[in-house]
Image 1 (cartoon, helix red, strand yellow):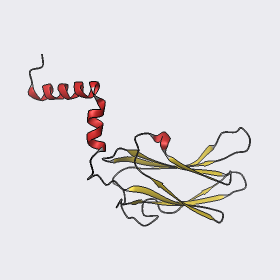
Image 2 (tube, helix red, strand yellow):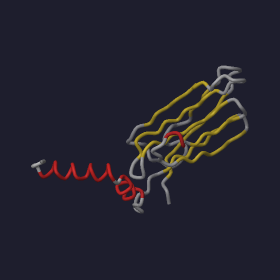
Image 3 (tube, helix red, strand yellow):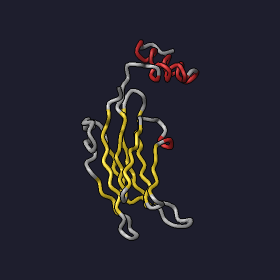
Image 4 (cartoon, one colour):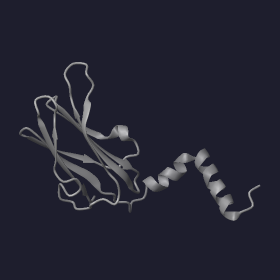
Length: 148
């Protein structure tokens, strides 16, 4: 028997979460006042420029990726929940020919507090990434855009 009132409440909350996990997540996910910014990145390779948008997700495997001309892959992971962003990881892979797996040539991780300027590249600045083979260049910059 737990006698301390604070521990009793904590134990009851833990038991409720264990037996009914959807009860806790729906309260956070259904909060309409939560307006987390989303990540927007401008990625340039050769004469091509693309925009990538990524919102916070608890599952890093659902992160957005972009392939460029079978040379580069850009991946943006915004790890968090509907209430906060825990960190942002941006990775650039060099894609090899054949069965060779992609190789990480650049990775940057950003922790809170984030620079909240909404104009690209307020969060990251401009990053230039070069491939080992033939010295190809990929350039990117990202910002956190307020949701409207």
